[in-house]
Length: 125
Image (cartoon, rainbow, N blue to C red; front, side, top):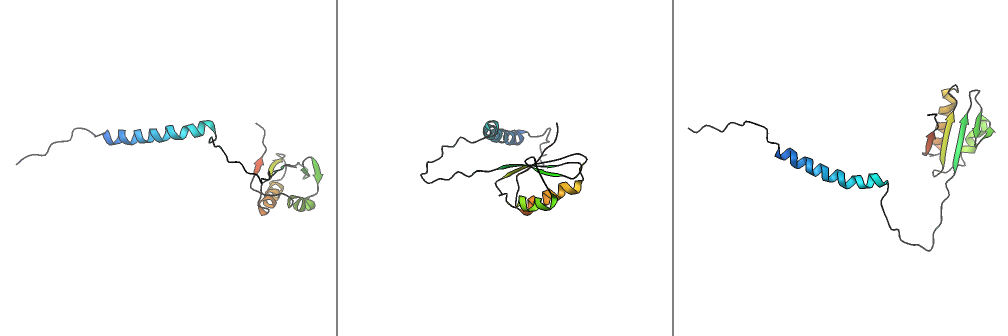
């Protein structure tokens, strides 16, 4: 009878193969990440229309006052004013740290109902 050969160590060749494939993938993708964009040459068009997105700043003070672009607005009128926004608009929402959380959620809820997804929360670094 022949005895089977005893394995003395772990075979690392498959692991090295996998690591080389992963390294190739990472090096390929990292060029896109480092530049932050893809270099595309876009085609020309004769009929084009540029869409203008607007930026809005909504502020909530500690004494429950609302401001849109530094213009004071009442809580009752804020819902009608925010209905004018389009989904391409950007909203920067800032609230005083002593402002009630309820007011913050009130504004976010109105924005979500109007399909506004570009919401930035302003904080101090």
